Image (tube, rainbow, N blue to C red; front, top):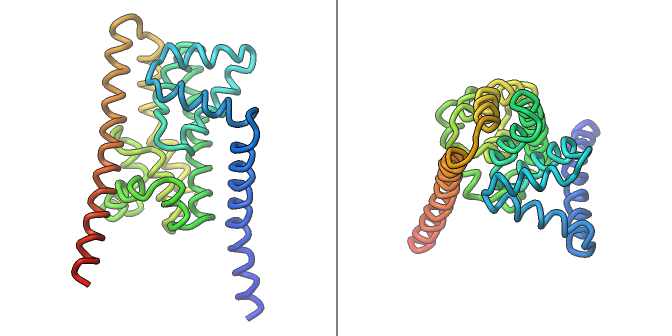
Length: 242
């Protein structure tokens, strides 16, 4: 019995710490303009789907631009579904394609790890409220179909939500090291391609590629909202039969 109680306490500690951190963040966001203002600004810039605006925003941090870009990528991962590809393209334009690729890949890995541990610590009910029930449901079928290979497969598919995969993986028995390695391998090709292309884009071609990537992002959002709608309809139908 003592061992069971100790196990329960240990398993509950990460959850309590994550909830405390989220609560403190929410309080700071709601009460401190110094916290809410830059977060709202970052979300607005990423939500604009304008690469030039993101480039200018990151460059405005001067010598700390690379550090800021790192945390901006992590922020976009946790606050799904902000478009992370805008940061990848911007990193390539600012730092060069290979340095931008390293920065984008490493920061995306950090964001994925954070999503994984948030999900593992909070459990599905809390994560559905935090990340969205539709987002999790949109990738659940992939986990059912591909099992242990799901993370690698989904990382190679540009139309599957990066953040939703990270959150859902935390709800499965998959070990973190397996998740992390699969994420690193699967994310690398897309990061290199986006960075290489982003470093060469100019004029109308840049807007064309950005537009296509935005369509991909909207497709992901559409899938998430469709799944959420279907879940609600199924729930209503179930309640009607009871």
